[in-house]
Amino acid sequence: MIYTIENDYMKVGVETLGAQLKSIYSKVEKTEYLWQGNPDYWAGRAYNLFPIVGRLFENKYTYGGKTYEMNPHGFSRRTEYTLTEKTDTEMAFCISSTDETFKQYPFEFILTVRYILTGNKLTVAFNVKNVGSCKMYFGLGGHPGFNIPFGGGNFEDYYVEFDGECKPRQLTLSENNLLSGKTREFPLENDRILRLKHELFDDDAVILQGHTRSVKIKSDKTDRYVGVEFQRGKYLGIWHKPHSDAPFVCIEPWENLPSVDGKVEDLTEKDNIGVVEAGESYNTFFAIEIK
Image (cartoon, rainbow, N blue to C red; front, side, top):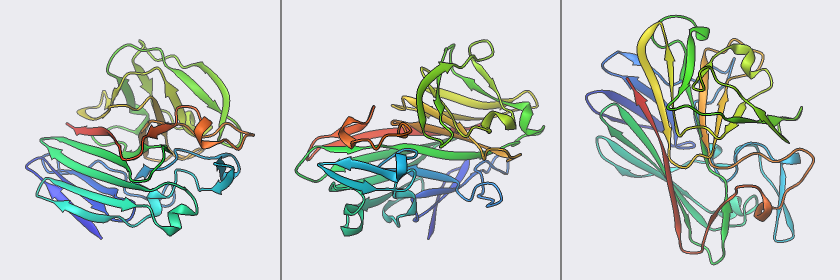
């Protein structure tokens, strides 16, 4: 089921499967900005990642002396959400722990994904509530894809601009698309600009740390841009399908990381894993601005 919200500037569609964005349509420019899921490249559009981000080694992790299995990016994207709130410009979707989720993830939780339209900005807010009796460990992130070009020119006329000078480091990947455990310098043009090229993604996602908390997809061919702001995302994934001419790019604010290759990790020892105490909640958001 798809639900929509809109204002004078934008119309946004979200489906209950995964609480995934289906459309970000500019009513002013009469332009669709969200990638529309062409399966020849990538059938997704904007996954919500929970309770892990990325891949696990052998799709496994341990907790409390037991081994659990989970597919890449967790089960949220394949779970049917329930619409719990709806107004003209805001809606919220929820999932909670079940007998099925306990087979993959041994915690009691409620996850709410809320979409809020304000002018030309869409905020995607997450609330992770621990309704169990013990400390809960989790991963969380976004995966929205954006059509390129969206205002003239070709894919390689576009670039990602960070909102201030920075010198990020890239977390390199192994041949299995897991973390290698190594980082390297990732120089930006003028310490701000990353030019988009299809071959940039031949080794899968570019995963950065030490960056600013806001970026824009821009081009010298147009005055339009797509901005993505992330409140707590310590890591930024930038991706499209490897070895392809895919006409989109994903800007992925991540709060956690995939596993290191060669190691089935214990969830409590995973680097930068999220933690929420029993009875408490964790809140974060990212926002998408369309000019």
